[in-house]
Image 1 (spheres, protein in one colour):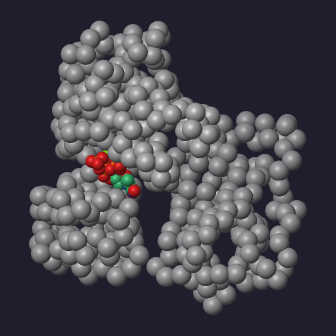
Image 2: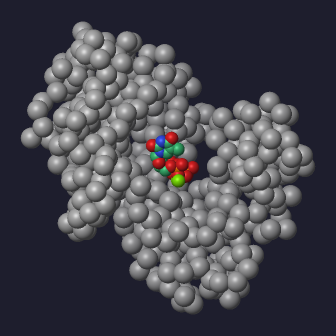
Length: 437
Ligand code: TTP
Ligand code: MG
Ligand code: MG
């Protein structure tokens, strides 16, 4: 495979930002595509990947036993969206399913109204992580500097390529190498900065290779809705819409002072710059996870008292999964937070910090239990989440502990010292807390 040799390994090319050449590589319909490798009989069909639904997993296991292997399962016998009852959401959909207007984040039951025949598979996150590691390792093996942006995407610094044609050759050979090794396709965008590269990678999916030049911003970017700017989420898009700014071009022409008054100085400035395709963010090459979290939307809203046992079991399972994630990523945490969303969609969080870094499931459960005691449980619970922060690589554990002790870390190092809210407010579910090991 051809790859131009980076001039400065691990460093963006120095000089003016406009000298840069950044690629954004994003896998096509990632989770669904990994599933299609496992179930080739579903090629070309509408397939959606949900969460970890037990009933779907059990149905698939029964089918595998009946047909002898997963490849042999008759597509007609597989679970369909129409049969699904519950509140799960789509993680992703195959391109055939997207033709029905189905996509990431949509409720499975809502998606069933659009395409009841779509095949519904349970997510297999471990498998997706494995493919994620594989495609990133292939890029790194070419000596290319990458910024890891999540499970299916990376930025690649190609500033060392002497001209665009050379970068295009590298991009095409990366696509070919990834496809050859994994059987998966990806799309690549090439541009002078990360913002434009990300947008370019979305222009011709799947298996696309698109370029965006600074001078094509007006022609390509301006007719698009503001939500296509990476960093403009649904809330910002709503606010912009309320100001009559639906398209990126309208944003570009809007009054900077009133935007800054509405969104704050730096966000307002960023919005204007983004609409003109300006983005000077550097490549972040060694990306350390800031947090690792797990959360689940309960299949029904649960009562903190009547469903105490079930809630405690779900909570413990989440904590144990979080500990397993930490162990898999070779990370220890020194802070745990708990998130609870009630049946009115009000979300609250509580956190606790401690001196001794851990990835131990019982300890994480215990610390998370301390957070629980500080919630007011006055409504049914819709969503539960636990998050580990203040992470350190496992091999640095001794140093992290020493640092924490040396800096006379004053956070709540002993859960007994935490002040829970008044007993009457937490007298329900948290009473099941186990003692700290
Ligand atoms: P994306 O790259 O956003 O989407 P995608 O790869 O499925 O499709 P595309 O071809 O448009 O890039 O996300 C990567 C994976 O992350 C996706 O396969 C599933 C997961 N995901 C979720 O679990 N929830 C979400 O809301 C989104 C957007 C993605
Ligand atoms: Mg993708
Ligand atoms: Mg992606």
